[in-house]
Image (cartoon, rainbow, N blue to C red; front, top):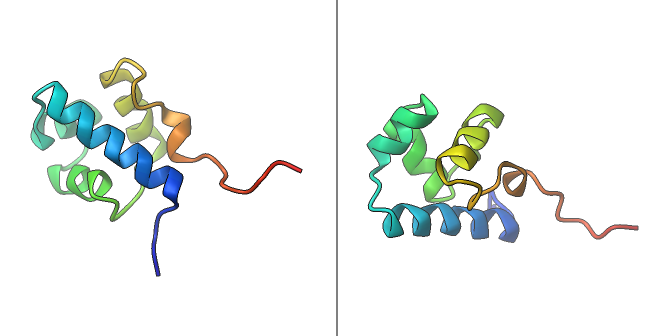
Length: 79
């Protein structure tokens, strides 16, 4: 079963794209987010979601281009 929704996959693509555009390595993101490089790799490739503190750090590092809330948005339609 797929772990992540379409919205979350879009955010992961946004993180990956931001890293490419800004020539950032997984190690740099790991240092900034105070996590291990392997966790950054898993988040970037859709294998896991970031923790709330990591998502907040990613938002700060990307100057809001990858917003914290986008990782945790509810995919159901509003009633």
